[in-house]
Image (cartoon, rainbow, N blue to C red; front, side, top):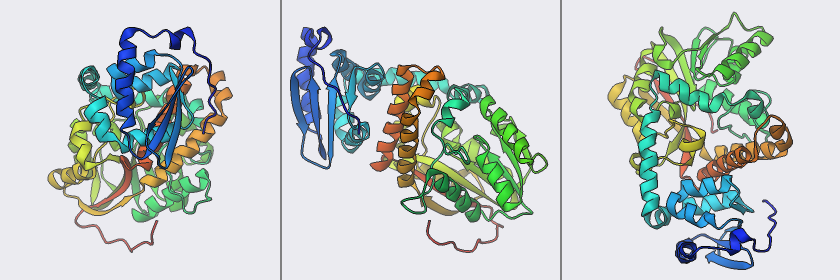
Length: 422
């Protein structure tokens, strides 16, 4: 919860043009139709209560009247950009995101219309140029993961540097404990044995590869196309004395060769782009031995929204993960069935653990703001990153998005003994 400071009306809020005065009540009427909670809207000396009584209560302070136009003409992306520029603040940004997610029909049907729909179409058209070809993937990955290791160090767990959902074994577990537990259950489900050669697609900062080598005793080959992640992981492997056990590559997944007993890929599938989903899963299939198995951790979108979402440009694609996309359960399973020889062994949903993971990241990020500023990141970036973390947390809580563990196996793979619950 953020404590908001309200100020008397300034020239920015008090001097509204005629169009804004016409626009404002129409947008407020749409917000007033929201169900499941109430928005207290403060602009200068005016205070409005919108929505209805419910579990979600949020106060929004308008600091610049241009926020109304940006919402009307830019839709949800415009609202995000307006927040980044300091036009408005909220005392509980996660609750506000949850309200918008819970009222998605209202947002898409009435708020994302007219010029906002045109803006979304134009952004969606621009998204087509972010295709994840070999060169496009390198550019898109660098845009996010190469912004600086020091930034990620301010909020990721300090044990593994896992930039993916943890799994909390009990409510009081720390982020470090939850990250370790997630790695352990994935490797256990995958039945990684000391004699196996494990391939990881998407190294991150080396946490999984190092943990697998140390705890399972297997050989590991891991690949990344991020320069920053490659350098960091190479240093960690050297410090751990694991150069003989871990092979680190800087290679696109499409260029990988050989066959491996086990394959693991954590939140990499979102970076391949919907145009390359079949290509990615076909590659996973081709890289496994005849009795091999693969474990994927994937952020997903509801099946009902997949077709629409894959074509549109939202805040995340615009500012956080260019070229990104979220598969749905059906999209992944259909591709596996049509394009591979793999059997689907298990699909476990862990989305609510991601909401908790993001909350932990957000608290650590907020506690490190002075350090972030010293690294050279300005206030607009800080507000963008805060919005990103809150946006995703709210989406997971409302189940607009989810996360799953998908276990796949070649037809000749031996059954793995049943595990207990997560």
